[in-house]
Amino acid sequence: SVAIVRGDTVLLVKRARQPSQGFYAFPGGKVEAGETLEQAAQRELLEETGLHAHHYRRLREIHIDGGSDGHPVDYLLTVFGATYAGGEPVASDDAETAAFYTLSEMTALPLAASVFAVADELLRNTGA
Image (cartoon, rainbow, N blue to C red; front, side, top):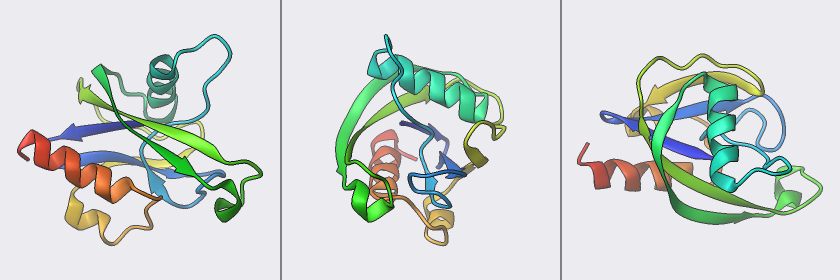
């Protein structure tokens, strides 16, 4: 997945499918054959939001128990931070919505696991 900061906001999508259907999360998805993790993050960002970013860097890896999410397998989520390159997000693919949110706005949203903590860390580290 990809966490992108714009000012004092972070990009989130509302997931239209499992896993985490109906929850807000960073854009992301499965790695396809022949892709690196970073290439998959770039592709998913473009597919779900129409946005490009640059200067990708790994932030953390999160183990997710698939059983607790209605998913048949566990998975390892790699979260990248990336630099916002401009434009407005347009939801597509398996994203129901795509927009930038402040931390205050996020408190009212159903968030996927670890999203708030990662967003808070990113905003503190960018001085927003």
